[in-house]
Image (cartoon, rainbow, N blue to C red):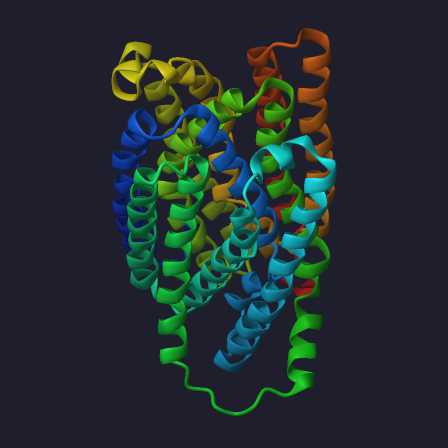
Length: 424
């Protein structure tokens, strides 16, 4: 571990967040197979994943990524102003998401297939706002080093979501039940964190307009470059489900969605907790050698975790999946194995991606993301036109994803060599 970073503190903070994430994911890993076997079909999961990938497009950029700057603020007043400014912008983004959904329902077959109930249009802004709030408050509590609060909330969020999904499953609401349950969990999580945020608020003086404007100017790169880049990244996740739904049907998109969910549960156990603490650590470092050493230190360990995860997935027999989930999910494991390759590389890259924000390379990442989007779309479109085979398209998609994330991982070394804190 490089000098200037308290190894014990870092490991303790990661462990604290991981404990909450671990318990939360255990809830998901217990409930999800039961839901799949007895209540929901691959088509239901396809619609469920499509809905939340669409919501994520607006939730992740709902505050124009200004919440990321909260962690960097040294003064509590500035951090508070930025947090509450982010919430106000999120309200607007939630309404924008609803407008896009309404427009999409007039022109897109996939929108019509999924948004087949008027309740879903109401749930879109609720989903965007609740997820966005959790994201904003997580940044605040990360800055305050309140990792235990974040960990407890993660468990509560998944527990309430699973309870909701079981409750609505009994009512035979198909994919709507899955969606309602997840929204229920997200709303709980946003209320939990919001209550603790406002309960401990100590700044009483009215915020001046010029204070908010100054903070916007200070963090303009998040708005101008990080927001478009994040938008493209979340749109790519949506595109994965949407393209396969359009070309190969809801059942196939359901297998992709379930595979992504299972692998994501495993990797997020570590990546979410690690990324928050890693960002908190690198925010304190201004020496490029120390940054490089810290980056390399964690890169080696993250790669090892990714390799082990892929190996374990490839060792799972298909008979076990059928035994647990039933015959209707017999094609899940081959899909999951292919996806595990690119998702393991993505796990490493995304866990370390805050290094680009530290290096003030938001503009660079935006350019990367544009090429990423083009490569992803072409990989599925061309493979469909040439072969019209689901697995071939998934392999092409996997190759495009893997190459992109490997380049992103190693390009960071080049930008670290150019790092000059005086220019930031």
